[in-house]
Length: 230
Ligand SMILES: [Zn+2]
Image (cartoon, rainbow, N blue to C red):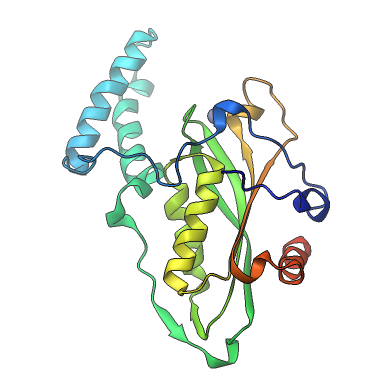
């Protein structure tokens, strides 16, 4: 489960490579889901979440007859199911079409600075970060926007950063049909910056290097690209 590379601390200048606290260590590469996770449809889930969230607000003593608060349980329920946790549902997985480009054979393609928004599964507060993704083409390429969609899909779950990194890398290996994939994620965890230790300057870097990216020269080339300012 240790995905962090010591190399990163010297390569990613200006970024703090930080240990995530014990309470942030995930247990599995797969998001832990119940077998009956999708027996209920979205409509039913939203209705139930709305009820439960209303309970939470009422327990905290909020007056749900107030105009500003009365619609909140419904809004939160919709946001959970249709937006920020929509990546739990495999039906929302992006469909990726490959197209052939012989000129790109054996070339490294890097898409960097993909901004994503996720949520920490331990506190349900935001993780905001950038993903840098690369693969070495076997002659097939995918539209760059599809890489963003893959990142977004896995980000839209309750997450731990290490698992997000692994899930994106595995998906890319699968769709590209190659082992030569690298993913680096640099993210701020609001559960660290806005509460608890309130460290506003730290960010967490995780990385997955597969195939040729395990080789020093290839890895260095990739890290060089992602450190280049636009
Ligand atoms: Zn957290």
